[in-house]
Image (cartoon, rainbow, N blue to C red; front, side):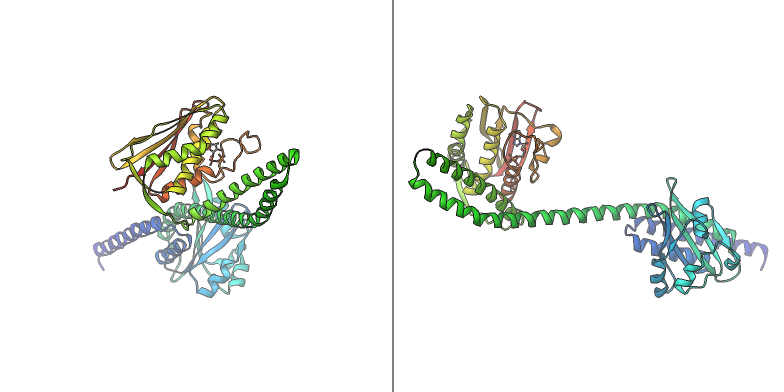
Amino acid sequence: MSDSSTELLACHQEVHRLNRLVEVSLVINSTLELRPLLSVIMNYAAEITEAESASVLLYDQQTQQLHFVASTTYSTVVDELLNIQVPLEGSIAGNILRENKAIVLDDVTQDPRHYRQADAQSGFDTRSLLGVPMRHKNQPIGVLESVNKKEGAWTQEDRHNMMILAAQSAVAITNAQLLDQLQRAYDELDQLDKLKNDFIAIASHELRTPLSVILGYATFLKEDAQGDVSDHVTAVLNSALRMRNLIEDMTNLRYLKIGEAELSLEHIPLVAVFQAAQNEVQNLAEAKGHTLFVTMPDVSLVVVVDRIKFGMALTNLLNNAVKFTPSGGEIVLSFERKPHSVWIRVSDTGIGIPQDQLDRVFEEFYQVEDHMTRRHGGMGLGLSIAKAIIETHGGSIWAESDGLNRGSTFYVNLPLAQ
Ligand code: ADP
């Protein structure tokens, strides 16, 4: 072959190699799952270096050891390799990682650092090895190794290609590991959420029976009781009723959350909903010295709601307004007609809500004040129940506040009857 045709051939091979590198780079950067990603990396490492096999060893920050996480050797060997820990001291891979330098060995058996235990455990026979470090942002990620060059010795080009591959792999592996951690955190949260829901379900169910007994006997006793005894029985009865409301809140929320709550929808004028809500909270508001203003809509403004459930959502908002406003405040229930919906507004002159918690108050059990130091009763469920009810009606709810002691306004956007 003439000089020029040899050069042409070399040139072709180089172009092919670069094309393949671009291809692999695209695949590596678009693979977000760790296992498939490692498999692509190893296959390519073995391919470009014309090796029998390739392995990835990842560095574990906690144990400060390297461990084989994948290998392209036969599947039985892969399983063996997955359990093998490789110490940083006294191993070739450890040396590569610590020194941050490639190691090229045409005869591994001559090298005292060769970690024979890996071969012994996996039954694989390592003869020659080309290993490169993987680092990302100055942090050690692991080592990429090609094992047993099929023909001849490792070349300068093999080393160069492995270095490029290792640099790209380090970034992709870091991303995949982060994603993996995130996924695990989400799974744990899901698990916790399930435990919490189960607990609520069991607790509310188990409390219901003894509570009905208390309520039954207290009602019975109240009929004959007189004087102080009657007062005491009334106190027991009132507390038991409050407890029953709390349990009902927990049960309601659960049904709403799992979408089992059925709505019995009816077309009703909004004014009827407003009147019912006003009747419900008027006494409570007056007892705290508040003035309750209600702007009553015209009867022509008709909404499609479940009277009881929607009423409960609105009452929750009004009760909060009463509860979180110091005596002598003003509570306003009003509305604003929009083209396809109506905005219902509940505002107060109370303690307000910090800007960064306006969304969080709708989370289950969330309360702005620490529950150990808070002065107000409640479990932090009222708003999540209101939100769930309103969303089941196809509406939405949000809060606004100018900050501490500057009052709060809750808005409900409810679609209008067609
Ligand atoms: P609860 O009233 O039982 O604590 P909610 O879910 O009804 O539970 O409300 C959650 C939290 O949102 C309350 O604990 C309170 O911190 C805050 N919040 C709700 N409504 C108001 C309001 N009108 N003004 C100020 N803070 C409020």
